[in-house]
Length: 526
Image 1 (cartoon, rainbow, N blue to C red):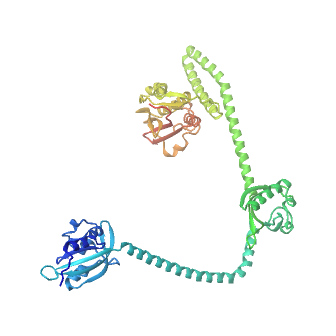
Image 2 (tube, helix red, strand yellow; image 1 turned 90 degrees about the vertical axis):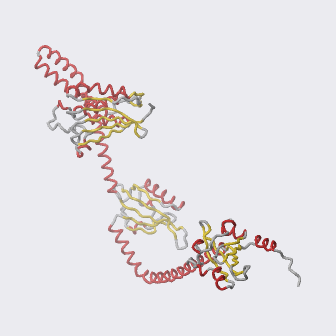
Image 3 (cartoon, rainbow, N blue to C red; image 1 turned 180 degrees about the vertical axis):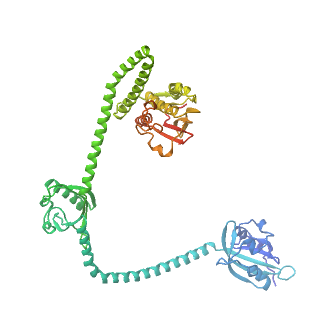
């Protein structure tokens, strides 16, 4: 017999170029040969595959349904055991971080000894096919569910419509009666109009005409011309554009002596074919509410006029009293030189009265808008030193330490008003501090400048915090002694802050002290 010309190199080339993966496993299931396709499919180099054991645990092998595959059920193990071909079998294996699906066959092969000591395993990747089948199965399942749901919905809808049809005639009359009763008991109006804006139906129209009297009439037959023009313009816009309208309207009926106010709603009216046949409207009588709003507005305007008049009166009175006050202080000074004891007391009284008049004048000017804001660049270090210098004699007389933290921050504001505002805060802190001291400083915070005045004084109870910026409110002066002040210092601070557009806040612990903070824009760098 003629020998075959096929050589071992030919078989090697054939295995290397196959599209299917081919591996040879020995009797211990270790890989002793793998072609290029096997390397590509399994994600390992040929060198990494040689000697690798094919235990199902190492490859995380599963059946198509996801159940783990046992070693004894693997086609290679079956072929080695039975010495017969096994497969094909579809299984999933782990390739890196993903799972792929293989169709695998196993064929026992004879080694040099002539016994079946090895197995030839061939496999092809069918991941795309498996995924397609899974998606198709899921789509079919969803389709079946949707079909079942549609069938069920159709049956329930038919049943529901049947029941609704059975009761519709019975409930129609009852619904109409309830609607009419609600309209009669309330303040609602309902009506319909044709394309010519003539009433075709009206119910509970409280405009001085009976409902039946309105049928066939236009708004010009019911309201004054001005009101009719306004209402017809609204209705015509609704019919032309199809856009519903809701607005408050003031109307004057020819059958009523006074105007009325309604919350009006108007929209197109359609027939069964969906064609526009006119307009349907509803309205709620809000005359009483409008009257109340008018009265409140008039009362508010009257209060504002009275407040402005009071402010102007105080400003004029304080200004008129300032000249006699200066003269009184001068006479008291002369009296103190000639009669020291009564003169000094009279001088103290005159000085107190002068301070009170100045405070009242400041308040009246602030309330009357008599302050002009002139903004300029302010070096806060110099400003705080000036403010502290004014209160330092009083602090030293009480044995208190008044300290200013040095700063180079600069802001933009009205220097006079800022000095007055901070001066009131510092003098107020010194007045209510008996031991310890007062610290004044400023720092950057969230892109702004915060000026803080700390004291170790009596503090403010939490229930009193909401009232401390009100006029004539004092915490520790129930007898209203004039030498303890008038309670206008913080009220002036609040007024100035509002004029400058800045904020003033306070945090206090009763019995331990307080900190007042002024926040203003940081207009300049350090």
